[in-house]
Amino acid sequence: MKKLLTLILVLSTLIFNYHVFALADTPTPTPSGVPTPTPNQAAYDQLQQQISDLQNRIAGAQEQEKTLSSAINVMNNQISLTQLQINSTEQQISELTSNIQVATTKVNTLQNSLANITKVLLQRIVATYEAGNMEQTQALLASSNLNDLIERASYMKIVQEHDKKLIYDTQQAQNDYANQKQIFEVEKQKVLALQTQLQQYSSQLDAQKQQKQQLLSETQGDEATYEHLLAQAKAQLSGFSNFVNSQGGASLLSGQTVCDDGWSGCYYNQRDTQWGGSSLNGTSYSIAEDGCLMTSVAMVYTHYGYRSVTPLTVNSNSSNFASYEPAFLDKTVSVNGASLTRNSSMFTYLDPDSAKISAVDSAGSPAIVGISYDSGPLADHFVVIISGSNGNYMMNDPYTESGNNISFTSKYSINSIREVDHISM
Image 1 (cartoon, helix red, strand yellow):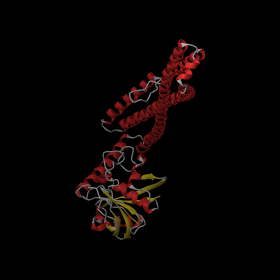
Image 2: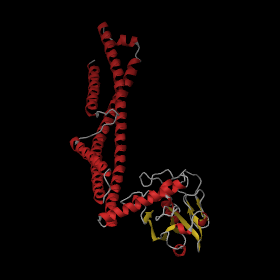
Image 3: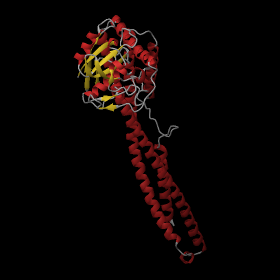
Image 4: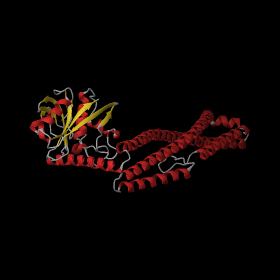
């Protein structure tokens, strides 16, 4: 009887120790069920406040009149904001990584404790089964007297009740272990997501620093130069919108792309449903309304063998756009490591047609040509000249539906030419 009581005490001690361990080491979950470790909460809160302050400052500065100094101020604040976002992300990764290391140790300990309790449970199941198979007559014969028989029955009942409790506690231990494993797997996924975000912030920081240097280079730090370039960019973008409106709007089209149609390249339409509805470099302008030049550049890329290039791939690199006006395409762009430069010859409506024809012919095939639909001084639409000479040209028009390999003069006059871009790659 003493041995039986000792066994019960040992089992009770094991279960008690398990629950003490589990309750002490189980992290307290957030409402979502995933713990968020913030051992340095004060520093984290301070970073978030600085990020919020900078975001408000940037938003306020963007509403002010555009000048070179205000643009530089916005860029500096954006660089600082991105650096703070990097710092915040690195802190979160550090805290989560530390928590995962602690959690791994706890899960391993839980696993060992669960294995021990399961082992004891299996032994008790076997012992209880053997005891349960004893015939009542055998118990009676084994008892020296009635009191001994009653005592044996009482001990057996205690053991059976204890076994039921042990089975329940073992199941709870298994559930606790499974829950902890799930929580820590979620934590690991959070770290992976934060690492991806950190890479994006780092790339964004590099691009912002490069954009600032580009702005200083383009303007030479001169306010008057900045204002001239900005006015020129806005005038061209406004011209794009006016041209599209004059043609009936920028309704989207499908099935427009055609490759190898007489000039070893692809025809793209700016209004194609594949990209027409997309924002032009994250601005309020759209490719369907204002993407004729970018679409023309994409077509020229395909002529030189870069068949994977589309208006979307040109659009995806923010460095292809002017720092002073993010919807204005730079003269030199880069896609998939290949650079393309437009060397422009400019004309007015007073220049003779012969000069414009000479410029197109000397540009070779292909050439990007800007036209003015309203006889104004600036180009407000761009097309690609794919073949021809002496004023008889075939073009790919990125606005006209199925505008591939059509006559230039069927849509526009030679006199409407305001810009001829020679291409170098």
